[in-house]
Image 1: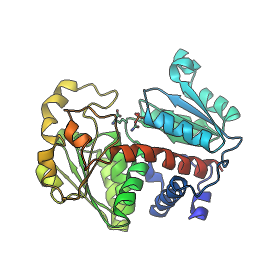
Image 2: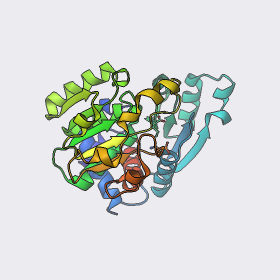
Image 3: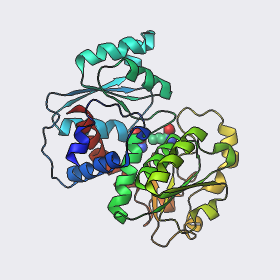
Length: 310
Ligand code: CP
Ligand code: NVA
């Protein structure tokens, strides 16, 4: 597995679509080694990571910076308001200048095209810390967490709510790479991006996974091993009133859980909005593994940083 990761040196990490099932598995194995204390602490010594933030972040910001520091490197927090891009400097120049100082550029951006433009001009790896379209660091953690709880078996994973959210897109891809049976329960106008669905189906042909997208939340969660949800109001969305109308039937609550497998685990990337997409009872209840999931962001961040940088 170590040799699989070594081949990734210098690569960008913009979407999990750019990685093979074997590469995803290698990230997961390495994350486990970090979690269970089987790694050295100085693999990123002398490495600098620029962390650009166009949007707020708690888990991603702290897991990426602690991961870098813990491995001996330095993470620079750069909110865009403090960079010259806020005064009109181009992404091209920003990428080229930062490439002279740092070994990787990680960015949380409003538009995925910003990451693509940074990656086009940077001479160092560019890492997606969330865009409007994808959240690959999160999905890698999510699959790592599922394997930690369920082992290596095939799972039925159900995402409820905003099927067009970055988290659902990335989790569909990660689930395809590991061959899960994946179901999206969402109002039709918030079904996932069609191009991503086609790519997910292509991957599933190879891995034996399946994808179903449906409107009925109860039908969706029947027999689910994992129910996953995310906010109905992702950062930057504008159609707030429409979302308030269509998403309530997709709330993850105790009644809905009764239709899933008795051992069902509930996952949420957080931050959650209690009483909206998830009830307080379920969020802090015995089925929820959201805080383990949050902790795992640290271990998977280490695996990704090491693979791309050394
Ligand atoms: N899940 C996640 O990305 O959280 P933050 O927005 O706090 O980074
Ligand atoms: N879908 C959410 C994820 C937050 C971590 C958002 O984009 O706001």
